[in-house]
Length: 225
Ligand code: SAM
Image (cartoon, rainbow, N blue to C red; front, side, top):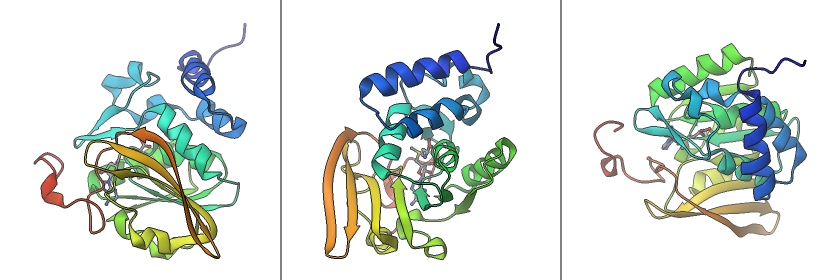
């Protein structure tokens, strides 16, 4: 009998029931999420819950995003092998690993130093060497890696940060939750020679983007300020 990798049965179920049957069609995205070991990106005490249809705490009052939203954002970004991609909000590094699995060169920026350091170590240990984790305010982007074929913002912003729009390549796509502190709309922004086209996708609930072009730090509680 074929031996299953740890949590492989749970991962297959996640892909089938939470992603494919809910409308994720891109076979490369489905394959990436079948391969990346999500249980390695949550604290040990939550490993058994890693493939459930929900975000989970990762410490510092932050979360690993729900699998469906990771898939929906990745699919909308149309990431191709060799693309240079910026992720804002590394968290524990799961989305960055999915992008790296698709063959992208990934810059991922995280404002909480402790999270950035542990994500960097985790991604290296798991073999996602194509990800460079940077600590800083991602609402200002990361100009050293620009221009980007895709930008994925995994924290909620009151408006698309102008620095991120500037750092997007012509022909590039940015996926970003835009709206209020508690409820947002996922937006797909495509940069063309003649301007920016915006399309509304799913509604969503992300933790806030804290920074110069996001929400002020004082809007946070004490734990992750
Ligand atoms: N991308 C992660 C994943 O794969 O599960 C989920 C990230 S979590 C929903 C959002 C992250 O954005 C948090 O770790 C938070 O600290 C970070 N964040 C918030 N504001 C930020 C900013 N201005 N720059 C960089 N990271 C930020």
